Amino acid sequence: MARKSQKINFETSIAALEELVEKMESGEFSLEQSLKQFENGISLARACQQALREAEQKVLQLTKDGDGEETLTPFTATDDD
Image (cartoon, rainbow, N blue to C red; front, top):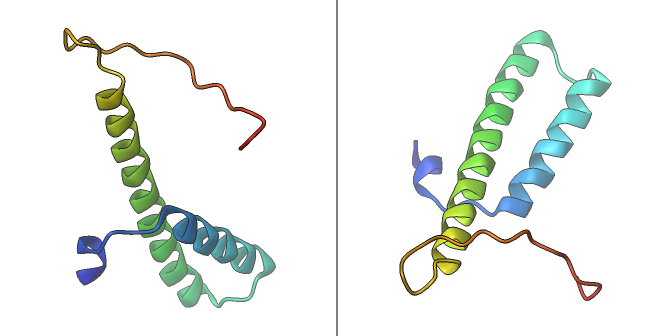
């Protein structure tokens, strides 16, 4: 599958997953189509989970102090976001 080797865009994948869920909930698909779309949705969800894990690893790397110790501090959003 060439799709797995490509970098995914998290926001695009989430939007595609939300759209897929809406269509499935509306009953737009036949049973066979629903199963195919469900597989697609699972693939999108797994790709998003992987992207989140990778982002978490980057955050952990960035928060290591000079001794190599990980210092986890809660994220606080600012009003600028």
